[in-house]
Length: 118
Image (cartoon, rainbow, N blue to C red; front, side):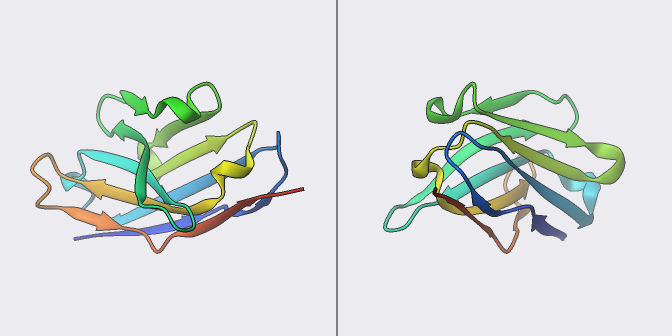
């Protein structure tokens, strides 16, 4: 299996920035894609951005385009989410996910709280 440890959450100001990190350990070679999800208070889990480990191809939802950037450092088995121009609606618990192409590997981090408030 794969273990994921997240860091970097906290309190951010509107229009400010935060950077989340997700470091993987274990059977790294099974990872096809890593992604960041979030769950805002009273809302469902939402996929924010994904990155394919080998190619670096990324995708993200419209509400964060131009503000959030997902990237990876394969040498250190770490995925990042750079969040700029934060908005109050970005407040959520952010979770890192790593999966194989067929989802037989589907690992989650413990979550990190991001709160955007002045």
